[in-house]
Image (cartoon, rainbow, N blue to C red):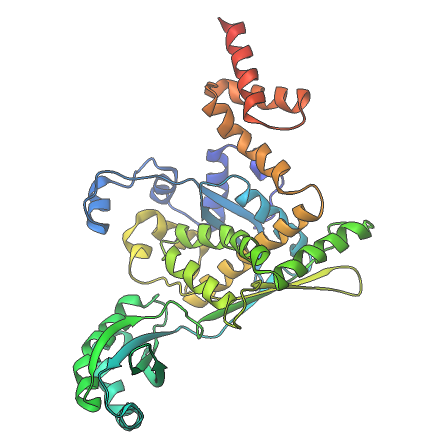
Length: 423
């Protein structure tokens, strides 16, 4: 079965769910979980966080038209923002015929930082830590024998000198292969457990013992050949590359450019129950790693007029632990994606980010962002204006015919007119 489904957006939610359930082999219970018929209970929520008083549902959409590393895939995306799912699905169509998205992964490596202060001779202490490297690695791996049994665990250390405002400090980086887990709990446990041993080795005092969310050894790269969406409109192609060029050289534009990338990535990360804040922080730090904040994507022109796009960013996502297993919807989403490893999941999410960015640049080069966004946002505005469920489609039709644009004032006027006719 292919991820290319004509007019998928015109189907009812039930029809969409049945289609993807057939594709992924979901059970009836899986379908009930995704549709909300079997709701995420207050008791389940209470086990996940503190002081629970309720739940906050977020729409779960499905991106279509994706082929990633030779495999067709439907991609669940949890977001409240209109146009995100539509835009990424539209963009993926332009890459599908050329083979879709191709990805690579630098590995599931995370790092914890152990800060050592109060050192009289910090360089001497640095040397002693490296001498005790094997002892430190063995000790760290004793904290998580299960991870070690799966081929992961602490594999290396790095020691850095940090010149602070008050003293020179050492920062010990514990380099840990977390395999298919995101790994925050694992590396934090290792960092905290190793603190007394590091103090003994150095004669200093350990302060911070915590992971870094700049996962620069857990980088995903994705590439795609996008069919030229502009045809013979050479001016539009030039505008596309001009918009991209500004994101490379201007941090004000790059920030919004990368925010658009994260619209897609964060939605896919949230749907799988992974840590959206960690991903956001790591991505933006990575964009600034050269000392200047820049685009996470790059585009080049192909000789035949197609557009070659690439993306590179850290993605510390996992399939083991946390909400990925404890939240029933996230667990079902993973089943729907049919991914077995964190590497597969990272490749899919990275591909979403590239497609989302391509869609944004394409819109900016032609009609602008607002036209399509406001059209999709119009359903929300109609509900805000007081339209009943059976009136919303009629409101949108009238708005399109009378105004050609969607503003809240116009939609409110139409709603009031329709309701006056009924009364």
